[in-house]
Image (cartoon, rainbow, N blue to C red):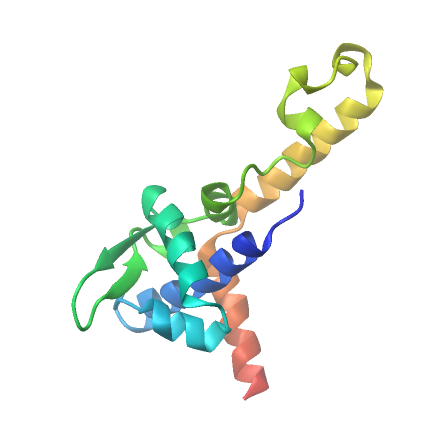
Length: 145
């Protein structure tokens, strides 16, 4: 599995929303604020948030004090959910995701390795919540100060 820039930026952006959820009663955070803090273009973040909204991970509030906020608590959102929303897929290899991808699949011993690895990676991503990521993120930021 290769996590794209979009996947990495989505995780970083949602970390900001999770911190707002925990510390500011889920106050909306503007794309401009996230863009500034994370050095990510506004336009790129807008595309990411479109995908996040379609996946029901975030919701938006319009107006002067508007922005984005989590649609559900951060302990209910997994890293898998976030990556699934923005990536083309989360499989470690194409053949692990699609049996018909390769004509050798029925007799390929290596495919079994990829399928097992895929299950391990997916399981880890499904077991890791945004709350856990946020806890690590805020601890690292406190050390840096």
